[in-house]
Length: 123
Image (cartoon, rainbow, N blue to C red; front, top):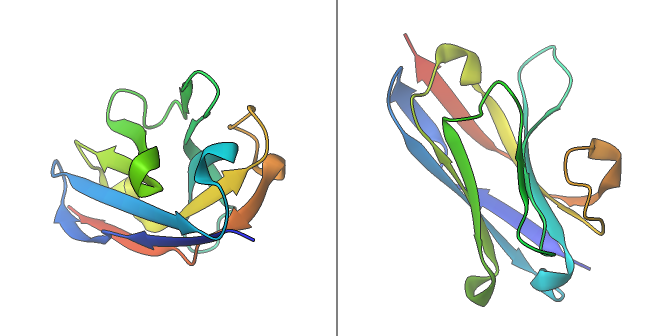
């Protein structure tokens, strides 16, 4: 009963920045913890960042810590991922997901997924 739509992906040079957005609809947005995942061709989907509605706790994968920032705007039913100092290895399809759990770093807790948005970082 929740729909997620990502936007903001594109092509950027290494060292550049990009901001992804995820708009939610269908039910109360504040009842979900939110996360960003990414998947490169031939690889498994991996956790990038998550934010819990309870206390607003944020969690990041080690590979993006210090470069990426997840945030939320409940009034707009939107979660964001600010990506700075991008590297070619960040290239992937990025997915927004919603979880009925405060444990945001484990993929098994996520019940709803967006369609994904492509991020490509050139050398």
